[in-house]
Length: 547
Image (cartoon, rainbow, N blue to C red; front, side):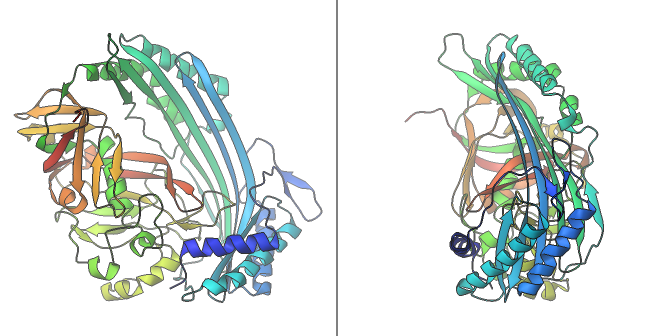
């Protein structure tokens, strides 16, 4: 096994300082060897541009010549635009555009990485040599040489998010007008005092090539929008907020904003925020919890998706809430019961409109759907090509090929790729039960809609989750709204307490636009699909109670 990523980055930083890396610099032009600009400005680039293919060949040939046994190069342009409003005014607009490339080289079993925003033939060759120099410098920290799992070569891959409207073709004035109109509609509801609204857009144009013969060109879109409405009681001692839980971030275009009907729904969301003011404080105790997918997505993210990242399981990653209790792999794979037999959790990067959907990951691997939890047992982890080799013994034992699950990602051209989360989703049950069906089958419980605050320990074993809307269930019916609700879990106890699960028609995608990991930190975007679930006898506390 190689040295940890922390050690790699530490030594990379030292090497970078020694040889003078210049990265993270903005650039707007792609130039040929004679210096002529072939693209730039506000429009999209063509990730399949022949000059990019030519430059990729220069990078890979130069890395090989300098001593790399394997190398890959990523050219990427990240275009983002964010709009923020509050009540009747614009709070901020940001517009960012960055373009450059990064080269990763494997030298005598050790990684090196270098990047630049100056996209010229000479610079591509220089940076490739620099990546090899870094790989040689990093050998001092090598524990075991890196081995890569085999991956099929894709010589001419193209992929694009399935969007209808490019959000960057919509005038910012129109976006502002829509958000302000939604704010105005919410403020018409008596008691709704404050409204924040926003839109986030990202277009990622990425060209990848490696020495295994893969060349892929992708254009990836992501969008997020919504309102946060705060209601204040007449005499001011209480305030309650509601996030528009139905507008989850997605891997779509501006049509998602249009279809979200922010203005039409603003009044209903504001009404719900006001209703929370008169909700009854929850009595502490043990309840059956009926969890809507708009809530369960976050619990799934923190208590299943993060603990099954293989680098956390091995202790190589500890940033952002620590390592994982789902370890060591040899003691839990095929043995540890995460939930009941009807519980199946899969990783994928293909669900239509999901945030993690791509054609190929940042190692040129075409992702596949894989079972992380199968029939309630831990079955696999999230892997890259290097990490897949760490589980070679398990895959051989199972009669399965040793291959990456396509979980490599870097947030930009300037960042080295590493294992990031795919979509991690709980599969629906065989019976097509709805959220309402689960409520109707519950005698005494609480239904929770939308995600709220949370806290989790450094092994992701003990945790606490809030929510947005809480409904008291008595005799199979909702009898009123509750507030100050949070529930406490031990991860495997909580998932083994599922006794009912929704069906296919109740399945929906929850999303996180900026999930953090690593040091230096990088963010990625992921979706978690799930149906509603019922968990028996979970401990509920009152967050508003003072000692």
